[in-house]
Image (cartoon, rainbow, N blue to C red):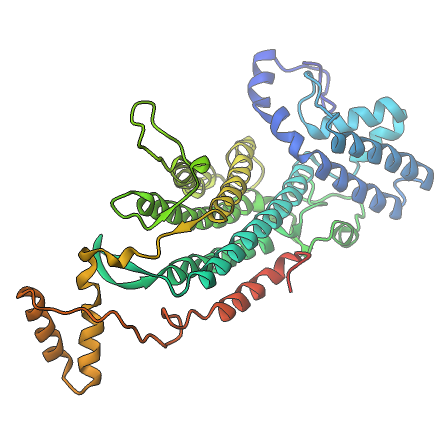
Length: 437
C-alpha cells in the first residue's frame, strides 16, 4: 500500500495497513455518492468564505459530478492501495486537477467527513425502510379488510382461547408497525443533524459557514457543539439499530405465526406451491422456508443494538478506530431488514386463508366466553355465569352458539382500519416520503 494522503513520510507496515483497513474498501462503496455530496456542499461553502476561487469551485464541482456519474453507473471502485472512499476521491481530483484537488480537504477532518457520509447514508436508509414498511402496512391493512369477516381461533398459552378473525390478526401487525415507525422516526431525527465542520471534534480556525452546509445537505439542524457532533458516532448507529430491531421483532413474530398456521395441524393458511419448498425424501412436505428465514434473519437483527453497545459503551469521548467496525455491523443489517420487508409483503400478497377452520369440532369450546357474556347481559352475575358454563363444559353438555357481537373499538366487529391508517400517516410525515399524505 502506498503512503496515504496524510502521510508525514513513513508508510505503515503492510500487515498493519491491511489490518486497519479491514473491510472498508467494500463498505465504503455505499458511501461514495454521499461522500461526493458532502464534498460538493463543502467546497461551495469554502468558496463562499474565500478559500476557493469561483474557477476552482467550478473545476472541482465538475469533476466531483463526473465521479458521481461513475458511481451511479457502477464503474467506480476504490483502488487496491487506497485506504478509503475519501482518499480515493481526493486522489482522483488531484490526478485530474493538480494542486486544486488538494484544496478540497481544507476545514475538515476524515472524522467529520465520514460522520457526514454515514449520516447521509443512514438518512437514506431510514427513508427506504420507511417506504418498505409503508408498503407492508398497506398490504396488511388491505388483507385485514378483505378477511375481516372470516373467523379463526385465538390462542393464549398455546391453548385454544377465544374467537379471533383474520382481519383482527392481520390488522394487529399493521398497527404494531406504527410503534416500530415511531422508533424509526426518532432515529431519523437523531441522524438528520449536520456534523460537518466539527473536524476532528474540536472545530477549526477556518471561518466555516456550517449553517450553509446544513442547508445544502438538507439536514434539519446542526450538531452545534463540535465534541457532541463527534460523540454522535456510535449513538447515531445505535438509535437506528433499535428501530431496526423493533421492526425485525414484528416481522419475526408474523413469520413465526405463518410457520405455525401453515402446518397441517392448524391449516389456517396456505401459499402457492411455488412459494414453498419440498423435502428430498418426503413427497408430501410443503415447507415454509421463506418464513423460517425471515424469522431467523429477524432474530439476528434484534442482536444489533447490543453488539453496538458492547463496541461503544466504554469508550471516552473523541474518535476511536473501534468505530470503523460500526459499518460492518449496521450497513448489512439495514440491507437485510429491507430484504425481509420486501419478502414479507411479497408472501402476503399470495396469502390463501381457510374460511372453514371453525368447522373442526376441536374448536367447540372456543365460544364459552361468548356464552358467559351472553348470560351476564341477560342479568346473571358474572361469577355465576362463569361457573354455570364451566360446569357444562366439564359435563360435556355445553352447546356452542357461534354468533358474535363485538362492537367496541379494535374488536372483531370494529377493526378501526381507517383510524389505524391515520396513525401511520401521521408518523410517516417526518420522513418526507413522496406519497405520505
